[in-house]
Amino acid sequence: MPDNGHKFHFKIWRQSGPDRPGRLANYTIANVPPDQSLLETLDLLNEQLIRNGDDPIAFESDCREGICGQCGIVVNGVAHGEKAGCTTCEVRMRDFKPGATITLEPFRATAFPVIKDLAVNRSAFDRVIAKGGYVSINTGAVLMENAVAVSKDTAEPEAPSVPVPKDDADRAFDAAVCIGCGACVAACPNASASLFVGAKVAHLATMPQGHPERAPRVRSMVAQMDAEGFGDCSNHAECEAVCPKHISINVIAQMRREYLRAQRLAWGE
View (spheres, rainbow, N blue to C red):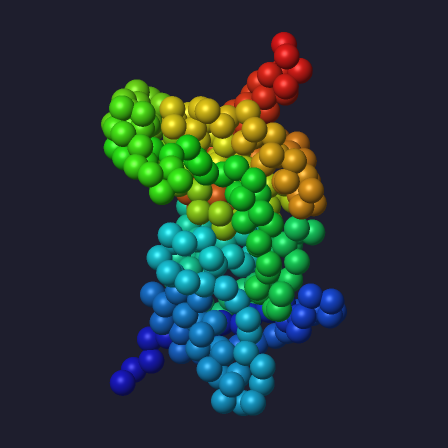
């Protein structure tokens, strides 16, 4: 059968552990179909390395459909690669010229320490979410309190039964599409997580179900963001440029407004 694939050269960051030195290593792989994804190409390269008795390249992925946010590689200096609006797993080899040299590095940030090679620890995002990125108010026709059913008259209504103006619903959805991949942090010169936190705050603050916890939510999430070592936002907008879900930096402005509102409430103004 004729070979319709191409040869590519890679410079890939290799680092055996969090406290170990790293370096760019050179690799070449041939017969790569143009419709194959970048991560599938790494799979083939790993198979080649294993056959040769070498250590495979560690990288993260899960759904490989641009949904889960688990993949994340800096491709030729750009988080997720130069193609706008896609995750690393959606990058195809046809996006590169045949014979090109492709440089792959991990998302770099103090709050995202390298685990190994291209894999980083993004659990800082989980800790920020744990500080308020959810609605904890119980809803439903019947609630259980101390193992005793509460009557329908005293229970909160089901969340879907609360009318939401379409404009508010659209703005909330535009923020809710954040998949927490961390590209915004990797792209920001300050390694700020403001787009991520702003998206979570804006999503919940826009919906009526999120209003009761607006003030403590934004105070706690911003405090945790700072505690994790993320930098501050200085409006470079690199985060917006690399976001695979096209989330606008408007959510950062909304987060700041929410934070100011929460502080004024705390001061009794």
